[in-house]
Image (cartoon, rainbow, N blue to C red):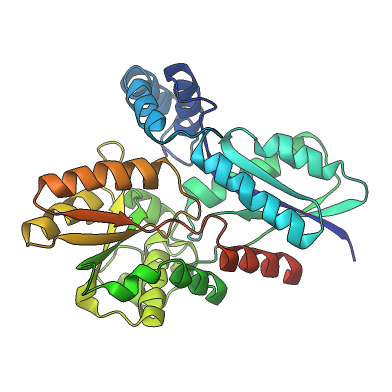
Length: 340
């Protein structure tokens, strides 16, 4: 049996919550052709003329609102997860970021240079498939292996959106859902948004995704790469396991960028609608993220709470991501140890 190492990959974070650091980070992130799916020149013009002159300062302020003594929450919590996995697996494990540091390249080189390593199990920490998360991470790992002629085999863990261990860990991470109808009026599943064009471009049939209102419920090979189907399936399995009624929850999509048509409804619109209907106390989960980050801590817990109260709501409670929850760590350990 070949000697295995494991490399996990998360999205990433600026090195510091200041404008220059955020500018470098956003440039790397937005110039990725899997993120903004346009020709290089057009992408360069959009990023250079309409994003980088203005957004870094605004984003730096957002990062400052959640920055900790240990730095970026995403990176710090990811390193906590890494420490837990190293302790429980007893094999070489690395943690990398697709953008920023520690990079996939640096961490992959470290693991490949460990004595006797022949195989790398690569785990993108995204439950649901998207080219802008899973594919770009895998392609970067493949690029590094080719560039440095590394003598290792790369195996990739598939998206785990419907894995029973993931669903179980997700449900156990949110005991608050049992108090819907008591302390909380409504639950919002807030998933990261995605342009509809990303959904249709990833459709291997070129005809199924977004072709009808119920396309995600009609069996199709497209579901293997359909982000929308997969988030709906995560929700269905969670709701079934938690025994929630349909009127107790909503599904929404956050973090829009640009003018393209994105998946709907938006989290912002959903919060406004609920507040205007008289809903006072909402619970929000973000199952597309396994680690708390800017999108959960600032966009939802700070901005979302403020906007909900302005619309007449009273409280928004964010359910923490899986982070280093015991059942989540155990799930990863099991996947690592039992990978074929």
